[in-house]
Amino acid sequence: MLRFLKRLPLLLGLYLLLSVAVTVVQVAVLAVHNPQTTAFMRQRAREAKAAGKPLAVKHTWIPLKDMPKVLPKAVIAAEDETFYEHRGFDWQAMREAWEVNEKKERVKRGGSTITQQLAKNLFLSSKRSYVRKAREAAITWVMELVLPKDRILELYLNSIEWGPGVFGAEEGARYHFGISARRLTAKQACILTAIIPAPRRYRPSGPYVQRRAAQIARIIGYGSESSPP
Image (cartoon, rainbow, N blue to C red):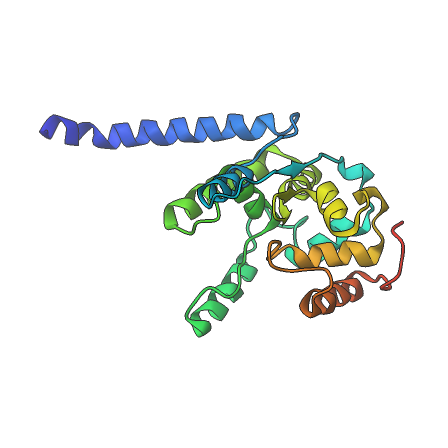
């Protein structure tokens, strides 16, 4: 037992190095490979199966260059306004979120960046824990080190949940508007963006989504009926 305890720091160190190496390889693959499934997709399928309601996951990849420019612009404005400036973590947003949550005495606001959200969606789950947050931080750091910002944004827009079993901008646009993401107007792009925080609960016609979409449109300088450039 004493011999094991003496070796424990070495074993933990080796485990940490192995974990980092595996994470680097997983993230490096994303530079050239478009993931067809994510941890979130698998989680939702398991939840549906456990509830006796099998879920058909819908996911179609669309390159960032084929999306109307207004969509990533709206998402950045709403979800992570300093996306192109930070290295994975927005400490100011995290501090503000902490202060809000402390006042409410429960989690009412998140401070996660787009990269952090992507790390969670691709590799982790929606369950909250300190271990998960630590893993999320490590993956986020590696992503920012290995992947270009545009690639991170492309992965994010193609991976996040946009409805029950609906993942990625292409299927989100089809589910909510019956069109390809390539044809989204500025108003529709802002509505899709407003749905992101609670995609299985929010609906395009809901009053909150409409108000939030109008706010996002004002922030990015698009009229409510504008077409994408």
